[in-house]
Amino acid sequence: MNILRFSDLCARGRVSGKRVFIRADLNVPLDAAGRITEDTRVRASIPCIRMALDAGAAVMVTSHLGRPTERRLRPEDSLAPVAARMEELLGAPVPLLAGWVDGVTVQPGQVVLLENCRVNPGEKKNDPELARKMAALCDIFVHDAFGTAHRAEASTYGIAQFAAVACAGPLLSAEIDAITKALANPRRPLVAIVAGSKVSTKLSILKSLAAKVDQLIVGGGIANTFMLAVGLPIGKSLAEPALLDEARAVIAAMKARGAEVPIPTDVVTAKTFSAEAPATVKAAADVAADDLILDIGPETARRLAQQLQAAGTIVWNGPVGVFEFDAFANGTATIARAIADSDAFSIAGGGDTLAAIAKYGIEQQVGYISTGGGAFLEVLEGKTLPAFEILQQRASG
Image 1 (cartoon, rainbow, N blue to C red):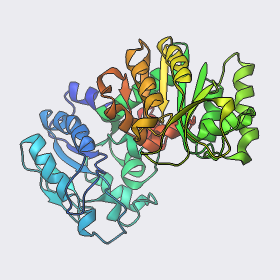
Image 2: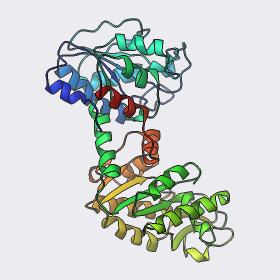
Image 3: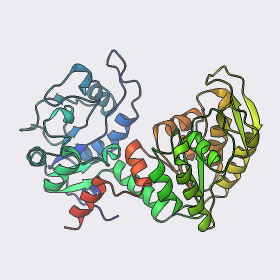
């Protein structure tokens, strides 16, 4: 992908003394007292900020947080907790500025955090006037928020149109490289794991991947729908009977290419959806009318693990069972360990997937962990993300 990279600008000495505007993803979870409960996104933003500071830039950083109303900054929407955490991580003051659209004062070697950008009127609608004002604040715009790359907003797209220079930060660059390696130029076999509660939310992803991958592993409620599509009983399990033809079409598309959608041969069932419910392993053909399928069975998990260990590239989105309940976690745990043990390049994304990776402690064994939920899904769908589109346009002149 032909884009300008901020790291290259720094290496060429083109950043010293410049005003650098970084769009980061600092949308962190807060508790009722306004304390950050998980700071991964703040920590992930630091390398780009340090890169700019070390290059002698005057640095401005902004992000959205929560779902604020335009023109109204509520205390719970403020980036104040983020500014405090940034100060700790950087070991330097990080002033928080409100009402910044019409002007920002910051000196080379300093960084300021610009208050929640979604409070600005016209942000979400990508208002050109707002975008031009943002662009006028800086000499270099750096997009480093993959989690927002699928949204064409003033601080993610419009500013990139009008800024003197628009480039990708290290986090966004790493996402682009990982996605290209996994989907555009994969080492074969290419195996995708797509799991979740509903086929409908990931149908376009399944269809897109069916044209690319060598094996398409489905899990969760999606797997139940595929089981029903091939005539297996699923009891009272979550499924979408209206989409059986769509599931069969995906299976047929894979088969036509000599590929497959592995259907579970055994499952783990319970009578109620509860962490305390007794778990029963059954052959897939023996699911009773009052059963809930809450995980793939050990035989299926072993078979899928063998396929993953032989893969060249693995794309993972979604746990294959209710891994939050220990009795129904074996399938996801087996998949996670197989990915960790595989020599394949692996890329994983999605909130539940990241939670599973953390639970099984395989962060260091996954080739790349994507920071963007919706953006990651849209890439799997085969869509061109607005952020990628505008950065490519600017790079080509």
